Image 1 (cartoon, rainbow, N blue to C red):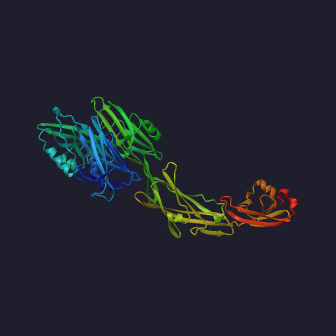
Image 2: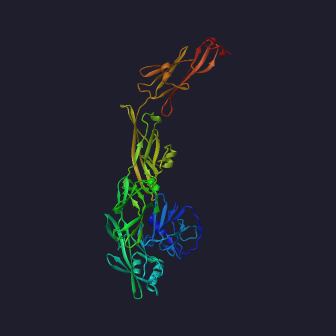
Image 3: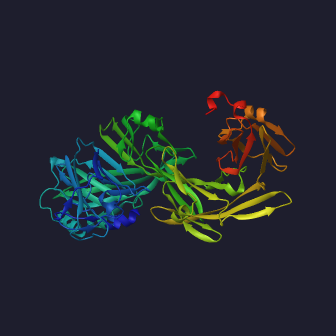
Length: 613
C-alpha cells in the first residue's frame, strides 16, 4: 500500500485548483521535520506542492527529496518531510513553508475537489551540524564556513529534470562567488561532478547558510561500520567549491542505525544506539547536552514515557531504549504464511541527541526516526466450545468462540458440510454470529451459536451407551484488511449428551388431596418442579413429596394456595392443580400437567362464614 500511494503522489508549484478544507488533515512542526497526519478514506491520494508544475513523486524521488510515509492497518497515514526538502519555500534558513494538496481516488488530474493543507515552520537556531535519519534516507546539513566570508548563491536540489537543469547551470555558470564543482566520497575516494551525484540518487544543495546532502540508506557510496557493537550505515563526503584561484572544501558525514541495532524478545523491544558515534565525534572530549525520546517524530515527556512503560537508559557506551511489545504508540498487524496466522508489532520511536565537542566547540543535533517491526509471532487461532453438556438435546446450542485476532481481521463466511453462509445469512438462520472486542479495543473474537437441531449439525445415536453425539464441522473464511488477504480456519466440535427420556406425569385425587406422580425412568432428575406458581424448593419438598425408586409423588391438599378453585357449590368444590417441569438452565418447559377434581364438601364445613354468600 505505501508504494501505491507513493506512485500517485504528485508535486506541483503554482497550480490553480478548487480547494476544499477538510478536518482529517493535521500538520505539525516537530523541530526540523514537518509531520502530516491523514485519516481515512485517503487510501490513494495526489499531493500537490506549491510549485509551477506537477511531478510524479516516485519512491526514489521521495527519498532523494526528503519525504517519507507510513500507514497503519486501519488506513491512517503519516507524511514526514524534512524542513530542507526539495519543495519547501526556504526563507533565510529561518522559516520553511510547505503546501500539500490531496485528491480523492479517481480524481487524478481533474477539476474535482482538492484537499489542501499548508504549514509554515520556524526553526532557529541551527546547530553546526544537523543529521536526520528517516526510514528511507539519511540527511546531513552543515553550516558553511568560507574564506573572506563569501556567500554562496542558493542552488536547488535535483531529482526533477527542471531542477537538475537549474542545478547544472547554477553549478557551472556562477560568475561571482563560489561554485560547487565536485563531491568526493569516502573511503572509496570516488569523485563525482554535481550532476552525476544527482543522477546517482543523492541530493546536494546550498541554502542561504548551509550545505545539505541526502542519500538513500543503501546507496552505492554508503558503507557499514560497527560502532560500539552496533552496525551503522555511514555516508562520508567532501564537497569542493571554487572561486577563481581559490578552492575550499566542506566535509559532511551522516551516520544512521540499521535494523541490526535492535534486539527482540516476545515481551520487549530493545534498541541500542552508540553514545560515542565514532564517524561523527573526533575525540572523547564531548558533552552530551540533551537526550530525548519520542514517537513518530514527536518528543515525549517523562510522564508520557512512564505511562507507556517506555524507558531510556544512558550508559558509558550506549543509549538504550526499551519498549514493551504492544505498547501505546505502535500497532499490531496480521499476516498469513502458508495459511497460518502471524502478527507483528510495529512502532516508530525517535531519538534526538544534542552534543558539543569541547575542542572544536561545534555542536551536533542528531535525530533518528527509526521504524521497528518485530519478527512474525505465531498466534494460531482457537475455537473455544462453551456448550453446556447437561442441556436437553432439543434445546441445546453449540456456543463457539473463535480467536484471538487483531482488529484488521474480518469474518466473511462460514463453510458447513452442505453449504456456505455469509455472516448475514448465518444470523438470518439464527446462528447469532457476533464480533466481540477486548476492553482495550486492540483484539477481537467471533462468537456463534448453532442449535443442535439445525441440519448442519451431524447427529449419531449410541443406544448401547445411552448417548447421542452431536458434531459440527465448519471452516471460517477470514480476510486481513486493507490488503484483503484471505485465510481460513477449520474446526470440528462435538458434544455428547445423554439420551434423556422426557419424564411422565400422572395424577389423581381423593376427597382431600391431589396426588401427582412424576416418573423420571431410572435417570437422574434434570429438571425443577413448578407447583402452581411456586418452585418446589427444599422446604416445600419436605412437606409435600414422597420419594420412590424412580419417581416421586406430590401430595397437595385441594385447599392449598397453590391450587386454583374453578367452581364452588353448596356441596362440592372443583379445584385445579398445575404442575410444570422446567429446564433449570433456560427455564423452558419440559412437561406440563394439569389436574382438576371435584371435592365433595359442605360449604359450611370447611369455609369460614366470610366465604359463604
